[in-house]
Length: 290
Image (cartoon, rainbow, N blue to C red; front, side):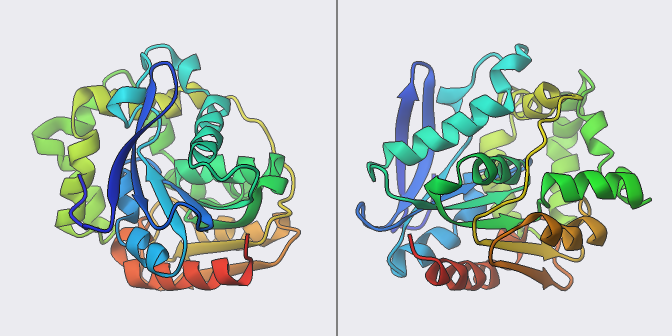
């Protein structure tokens, strides 16, 4: 549950066994901003952006994604149920469920949610008015950095570690010490960590969250250049994404593009410096109306 009275908690069903916990703020007929979270956090990553966007005249929507929502948690041992194409379908269906018809919407993605957002922007550019990316570089820029940046494979070593069958127990051991330590190292306030752990700090949710990694495995589906106006926000203290991948993203966006580097900020900028992220996001959205 969220504590801000301007944020409404909803359950949105997009199909059998797919009922999502969603935070909503703003008027139903306002331009839609769909915000997708990544791993080790939840919809609460955007708790500060939701009221800021609503106050500025937008309909802000942040779901707990597949596996993170208890009502949308297919068996995580069946990795195919967490294939990226299904996750992308969830996001598009949630946008449709907000009742805006064929109107273009603004898309925001962080980490794994960013992977979905890049793919949506590449394959469905006609659906989007703008793209805002937090931390996650364009997949081609990331692949190039994995090849050419000696540090990037080390930064991404958790991808392999999360394939281990015992990863859930490891991450939740000692009152989720691994998650708490990583959050603190990336500047997430303790109160925000507690909100995220209320969602993913149990074995069922964590196993489903890790299914995103296990479903991906060695499978990659390359995407081309992006034709949607894009803002990329990257903190130079991000422990998972290096400068080469971040700065290289410009090579794969064929539209108005801005890279905003946040000094001293880690992987979870929306939690660490929420006011700055809201400011950047609103500036970008206003420049590219739906």
